[in-house]
Image 1: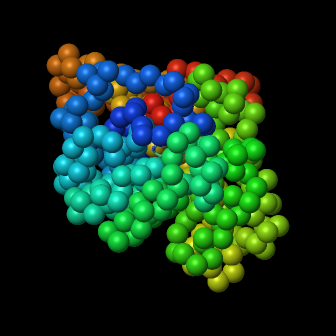
Image 2: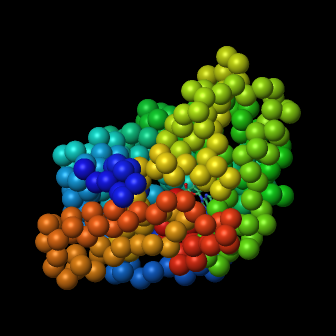
Length: 326
Ligand code: SAM
Ligand code: SF4
């Protein structure tokens, strides 16, 4: 098992499979984003070797993300190999959903259990504005394909002031009145060169909560005081779905954080909002043994940070979100 110096057991790994994406969401990356040469990214055998090492270290939950994980070549084979790795109990994915209409079924057959699908608004024009060119109908097609493939579904929305902070959050919450889905609102976090835009547009959980309740009535806490993963959960009376808030900015959940991240270029990122990273790809390419890699990983985890520095204006500048994986 892997523990940090605060006694947290770190057993959940989010792996960014690529920094590339078929969208350019305004809150995630600049429009003229340049991507890393493929040779600098982890190759399939390198990803799978690290999954095996992390699973041996007691990591049992793995989430594939990006960039957009579904644009990675061989994604179905990667899911299959990961799901079959001893110790791996659950493989999930965060995706924009655009390619799920053809990939949901084969990925589910390969062992994928859950998809968190990003959909920030139901309004086609606003969706296009937020993603710079996406069609919301393509996401819906992906959601239906995920349902047909019997994948567990959660929907994620990043809320951005003056883009989707009013009727959009209400429309999304309304889905939970008749669908058994969890709709989660994510507070926008600041990263790198687009942090000015992000800081100016952040909408807090308290404000989103109030907008939803004013329109649809009281939200009843589910398991008050407890988080479901990183989300605090609510529901409307008798509703089949749940409304969740992921409030990393206004209500950080560091005490219960059990996760580490692997960037597409093979760096172990210990906290989303801190720049600290540990290079695993270079030692691997220089011939490090599994025992040596375990030592590097355990040391990195030991020094996992606690708490973000946003209130002291400390913003992670070394990467934007699409390079870390969310
Ligand atoms: N492309 C996939 C997607 O959009 O779901 C996976 C990668 S994306 C970086 C992972 C998650 O991070 C998504 O739910 C996305 O909405 C969220 N995200 C992106 N930029 C963010 C930001 N600045 N603050 C908070 N969440 C963000
Ligand atoms: Fe792509 Fe996801 Fe970032 Fe949007 S949030 S640009 S879909 S990686």
